Amino acid sequence: MNKYCNNSNVYESTCIPKTVNASIAVLTPKEDKDFIVRKVSLAKDGSMPNHINEIQHQQYVLKGEAKVVVGNEEYHARAGDFIYIPAGVEHNYEACYGSEYEFLCMITTKEDKITML
Image (spheres, rainbow, N blue to C red):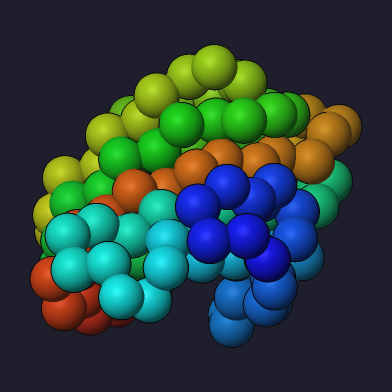
């Protein structure tokens, strides 16, 4: 891999526990102390159950569409959408519209605890 410029498809992707057909690749170099960018992919009909993070995160949808629930609000998220998830707010994802769903998730390097509901 190059030092400063790489295609996101060259990064190792791992399955996310307790999900259905969801994977994650960390794109930010390990030595970065400020923020982390991750690429999350849900296969068609994949899902991530309701959970809470202790830190906020911001997401940008790269492709596909999914039902995204943040708190009590349900959204039909599509490529180009930006999603903000405050710390401590429950949220979940379901790629239920006939396509895969892929987004970038940006977080700080603060310690995070994820609670599955």
